Length: 385
Ligand SMILES: Nc1ncnc2c1ncn2[C@@H]1O[C@H](COP(=O)(O)OP(=O)(O)O)[C@@H](O)[C@H]1O
Ligand SMILES: [Mg+2]
Image 1 (tube, helix red, strand yellow):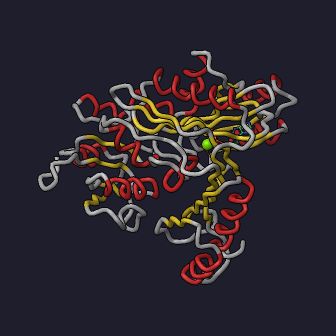
Image 2: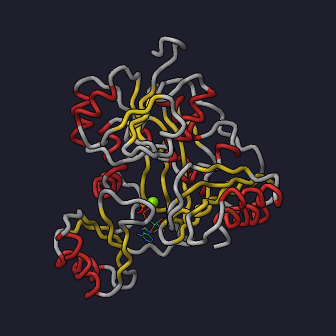
Image 3: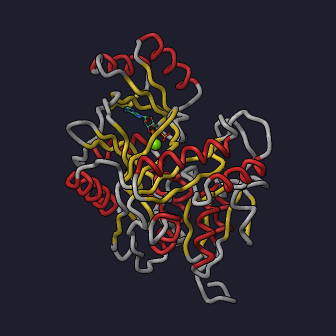
């Protein structure tokens, strides 16, 4: 416990925008987080009082970092499972636990486990050679193949859509030569993507936010609409129940985001994240309890907060680095003048093309109207790209 406040010390491995926003929630709860940052100029390192520096794949660094923390949690999945197993065996309280986290770290382990338990997943196969990839392509000739790095991918880096055999074989050879573990999936004929985000505490309490629609561009989430427009009540409930069942089955503690594909007939699980997730950034402004507060409450086994939305329609848009020169400060002036109702969250990152720099949230009565405002706000901040 922190000697001054008598409140828990939470360690966060990783110092990106998720750790930064978690810290913002921690302030309200009387906590201050201890952050493990890889680089000097990190998003969370700019704002947290206790920042340690070191690589998250170094066991000695992790061990030292965890000393004195009531619980250690994560901003990203890139912590070696074998190190986490050692820390857990030494009694370090890790949430989510390494046994759960592996299903967010490794798409192959996730597909195998969820498939074995009867959850709806796309047809898939592990790929250890280009012959295996071609055999899988032959099984799904109409659908086409999505090749994925089993570990280490994010924002669509690590996902390749490949329909023709030559291109597939060539890509597989290149990636295997680089040591990238691969799986192949059928390309799901999805009508849209949804996310069901829930939280679970060690006590076993669960709480679910409304199911949202997520809009991806080049594999990266760009917009989130809450609740998912036009989603049938029974399907929304089914998605929440699915996420809660997964949280219980895998004994997830903290926030669990279940990315889903919607097809005319069904819901299919895409992937799992066991931490605050882009699809629930809208909860900071748009729900009674934000995902960042809820994650902290869950991992510390406090009772969970209400998840009710604060408006009938909430839209979030990511601010992504473009190529336009000019001053962000100036663009903020314009945005604040143009739409004083927009809530802006910037992550303190140096702009680079394709990098998530922040997000904006708009609350209102009608989803198309708030979506337009959020999109326009993000475009203003991106410099009109
Ligand atoms: N099997 C699939 N069928 C159709 N689209 C897919 C499939 N797998 C992934 N995608 C698309 O690629 C995006 C990124 O894939 P995902 O597995 O979620 O990787 P990441 O870890 O980068 O988020 C998804 O949000 C979806 O738009
Ligand atoms: Mg994804």
